[in-house]
Length: 426
Image 1 (tube, helix red, strand yellow):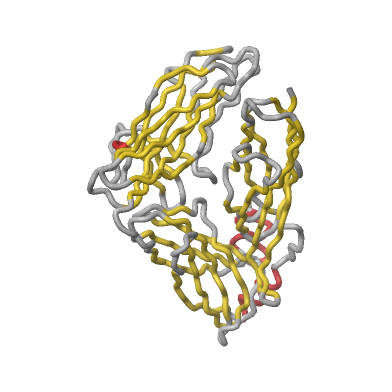
Image 2 (cartoon, rainbow, N blue to C red):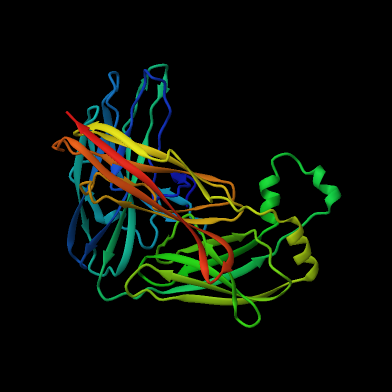
């Protein structure tokens, strides 16, 4: 990338997150983009349409109108799942030049939203999956209140699928390695600097690193898991593999990791890493390696391990109760904390049989938590202006799987439920 490139790097658990600035009470502004990402299917040499809704989410008495600017940017994703936006450089599968809008500059009053129409014009030679980002920002924001510049950016991912022929997903495991625990002599433990407890704890666990590459023309979402077997191929442990971003675009690689704190007995082990893609025709991709645990290491590991037989997740608040009027847009935040000493894989989904479609949207449905870390899960709530009064109920289901030894061939899975109650008034 050139030196003058305008690059914005965000590390997020969802695909894109709303950038926000905490402002004093006399200076508030904000916006949101929906959907956060979408797929657009188009035939080679043809056009296809889509739409993006932009909302001025603040409705306070002194909230100012938003002068909105919409532009198309390229982005790439690093192996660690970090998104990089680049205003000047185009990558080989960029869809930025194919996308146009019916409006790129406009003003939104407090609480107002606008649906802009977009068009994708695919070249005749296109084949496979391409992508770009719609970046929405305040256009030349002025100083407000106590001289604070309000400069918000929000992005939405546009993925374009051009189906010239059936592109079979092609993945390869390019690297796998096992890092065994390390233990320091007891007399040195007191010399550890403050704040290194978590690092020391992870060093005393089994860690697996794996790299998965997309060798094809179609993007896919990958799930990874590692299985440990004894010398007779008897399964002894399962370790979900985690990454910040499970969607892997053509030509990209992604790093997956897994940590297990429970000790292993001495012996020889076989490790099998299995990746599956979320599609009807997805294939399994595997790779096997072998490693050993010495008698000395097994003894140190067992002697230093402290059982963490507790509920894996702590979720606050434990329910969502909102009283809203028609036309409101808001967001509810949940703090999800991993209380155990192994990394966990978390999947969330909405059960909204009593809630109309489109009212709720989870910002991230799949994410990773390392030992003793937490994540802010956002649930966006958009009530249409014509919503009927009454009470509407639903549930957020959270399934968490932790690494650990296999007991009777069952995985270590917990299920949590967050009740939802939305009351619509006049």
